[in-house]
Image (cartoon, rainbow, N blue to C red; front, side, top):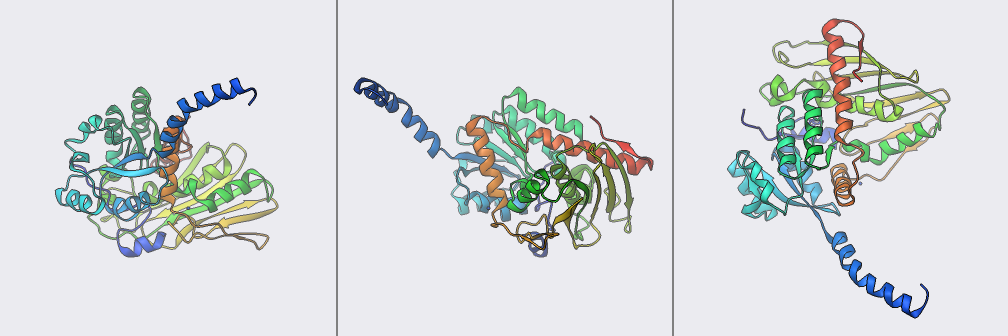
Length: 382
């Protein structure tokens, strides 16, 4: 199947309203020796400091156009070096706008030739979910580090293959979990870790919106892998995991479809409960049927804290049971995640949103779908 550029962020509707919905020494001799040594290493340090990691965007849909490419212009350690698209007119428009040389422009058929391009360090996979595994694996085999949009893939087995391919190529792999770099979310992680309001007991989290065009790829099972859960429910799932710092053990879930024709291949609305090893319980929800769900509320034994809206590109707001407002500097979340990955590449350290992190989410998602299918409690694979 020919890839489609990812039409827009999987956390936002495709229309302008969707983008609004969701919008960062000693002796002289020793001194001389040190000075001589400095002459050797200083240029290398300066070169590393000046180096910007070259990103190639794979897929030029709405998310790349409206969020990622503009964010790259705000980064400190990255630059837009190349593009990959199946639409020649898009390539031409991007070349004109961002002065991208023809040698750095690829089609999906010529994608593997990126291996011969030293100007490109990272490929950012911004394709429909069902294409993530193939283009991550091909990118790694071409010798490029990979940043892949969420969800990481359609299945946990695909995630394992992606991790293995990057490991064999000695390349870094990260998943686009932008909220983990967002200051309000980081503040809430600290509140949970420091037990500011005591022991965490329960989390209520959800994200949903009313989806539009019935012909879009998000409603196609092979491209999307699932519906609201894979698209935006994963944000609520992630929040529960990074607030608890634990992996859920068991899931019970239910699905509802009010439009079985439109949602013939994917889920429309899902609610699910998660049980964590510490005893924390989480109640989560996601939907494509209506908007207004965009929050998490963390209940502790001595109070609570929450974000509402929680997962948008901007305008995130938080509060606590003490009457405090959680107010942090607003950042470009995409710029922050790309700069962090650039630092990981330059420093040779793994990302906190690595492929393993993406795999953990898919294991939980698969347990949710298993519970829906069987009507029983499902255990999360270890």
